[in-house]
Length: 154
Ligand code: 4NP
Image 1 (cartoon, protein in one colour):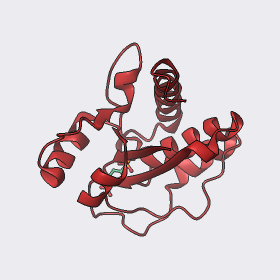
Image 2: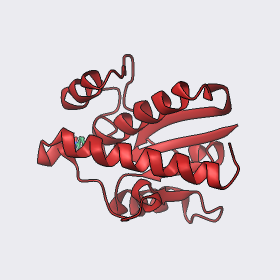
Image 3: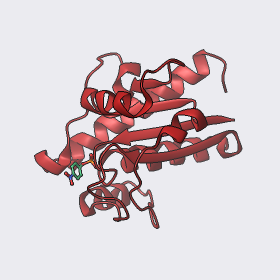
Image 4: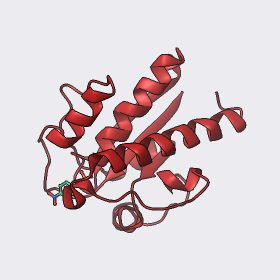
């Protein structure tokens, strides 16, 4: 079982988008039995809130549902539970370090560090551009999936 946790600041825009894009990718390959996939926030701002309308709209446009998702905050326990903790930007990694102390098991990465041009994913909460977010999230999820294949983990 491969356990993947996507993380962003609020868990209403980027990380739920990554969660549902990756879930769809895995489902389309009939590999859902091999994965546990979730997302969470570094902040407490949006806990309990549904996915942002901009993310819902973009996911709907590409045929992906995210019904029922509510924002949760990343906890220290999640560090033990998950194998890959994939952050949307460098500041998320810094926030997680304050929660977990140090990444002794090497689980924390930036999603787009798996892509050919490693970078942060801009926050659409501020940019309003959910199309760019989706393109980055899709690129990151595809690159991460390729990495798992290359590592013979799936
Ligand atoms: P996200 O975007 O980290 O991609 O979910 C944000 C959503 C809410 C806030 C910040 C970023 N906020 O400050 O409430």
